[in-house]
Length: 238
Image (cartoon, rainbow, N blue to C red; front, side, top):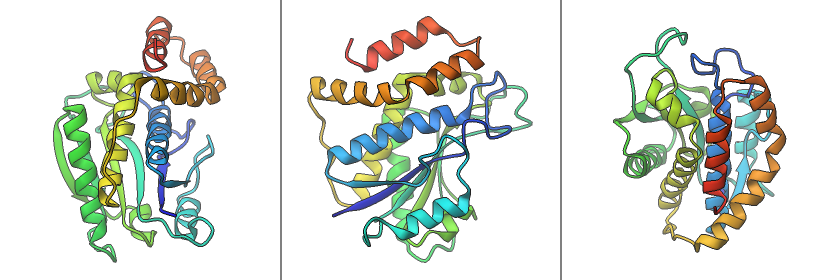
């Protein structure tokens, strides 16, 4: 059994983690995580979700889950999914792009390779500005036993990228690209799947989060409901 761990950054109500217009970072993080898990499972990988709760899971809890593994099997790696911000968070600016972080003094050089593969996949698949691999002393990177990386899939304080983070197609693309990077790291070649099977599986995942999205619409009346429905229509097979 091959195990890999992922987690979505923060929680849906974490203070400050939202665009200047109020869209929660975790809505993107969670959606991308769901797509990543699905892609990895499709390739036979057993997935460990370090943050299955909708509330903000403590960093120590996330790390403990990753380090514990599943049934005694330790994960080959861990990816934490985020969306970046710059400035005071109250107004938009021009800072943009994707970057991936790993710890500068991680016990295994594997984290650098994992970060490299993740960054390459995200840039190739999304065509966003390449901000490269960064070295950061983040808790989840420092405390995990396995190689760990943290991806920032754009800047929610950039108007264009804040719109991308709310785009279901972009969420799906990021999830697929994250999976590609993780799969490459553990030596598994990514393979496309048939369209019908893909849409059936996505629809099953979408249905699980109906209540969460409904609550999001209620809390964010500025959401383009027609656009959201069209995006769901697109990813679920038209």
